Amino acid sequence: MALSDRIEHLVIIPDGVEAKLSEDGDVTISGENGSQTRNFSHSKLQLLEQGNGLLVRVDLPRRKEKAMAGTWKAHLNNMVKGVTEGFTYRLKAVYSHFPMNLKVESTELVVNNYFGEKVPRRAAFVGDVKVKVVKKTEVVITGHDKEQVGQTAANIERCCTVKKRDRRVFQDGIYLVAKE
Image (cartoon, rainbow, N blue to C red; front, side, top):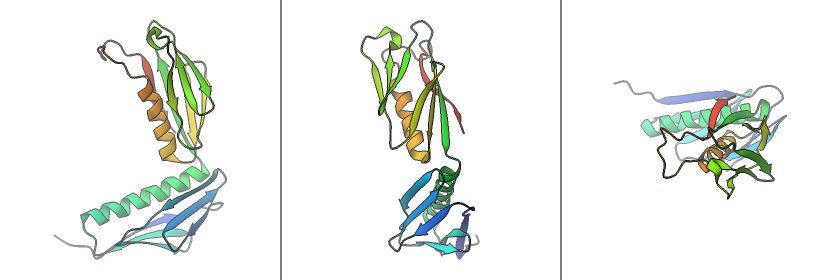
């Protein structure tokens, strides 16, 4: 089995995006949609500025360090995509008998009349994402941080779980339809 002595991943920073690397490992990426800051510190991995990008480097890597280098590359690519294009998740409300009503109130989504329930269900938003209800049954979540957008979508899905009924028969809920 051949061992590699060094692994390097280069993350290209496009025009219009600015990346700042601090001494303590914080990376701030700024673009037209906002800015994101994240800490990248590890005993074996290094993050360096090189030309028009950031270089993730690990010398004499073991399996976990190889995986961590790939994870850092993916996080940096997601940060760059977030500040340039942003992330959009689309969810759809599905019901068979009781029509549920969706409403956005400041920092949460309120679901009324789910299975005919009198008490509304609520799903909290994470971070500074924007949520809007389109055509009464579609929910669109947009933001520049992929983790915040994904967690908000998960909170909305989770608030409409079916309890004490067979999930194969009672399929009402709000489900993720598309990621853009």
